[in-house]
Image (tube, rainbow, N blue to C red; front, top):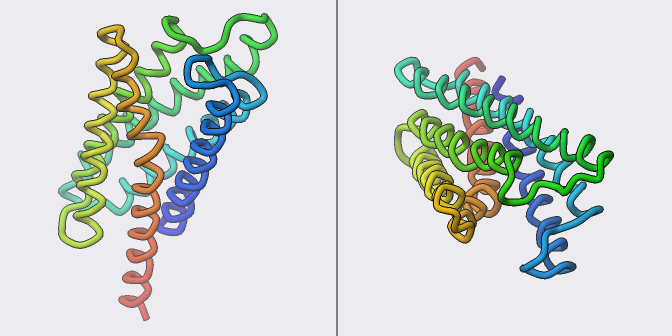
Length: 205
């Protein structure tokens, strides 16, 4: 499970970086005032679909290594991660299939489908990260991960004020969290899984 955790969180980092690069290319090509279109939009949706199962696997691995007195927190984090994966998976599968075949306008605000997407990434992901942070009690790398998860989780929740108030500029706080900062948090967690695996090997050798 430690190797699964290391590779899944490393995968989250890689996919996250690819998403940022793709989004930057899309924004450069159409500008900041227009929505990103295909083929860049399609690539972003595929990357999001890849992220969904990786998120569940990563949180499952975190739950597996959580100390016994922290497993309630890790289980709650996993539950919210499953909700994120389910909602965003449905949104982007519909985006890649139904919306394109019917010629319906894509995921734009305000719309029900975009509201579901923001519920997943702003609220449910934010809660998942905040509860996962409680697993990493201690000093050193664990302390850094805990602080980073608290910051990214809090920023996600703050960003939900965008759709709630109708001022979508506030939603960019969430984008900063899961789009820019979170990939590097996953890299830190991958390093933690590596250290955890090395510690287990040292004890059994």
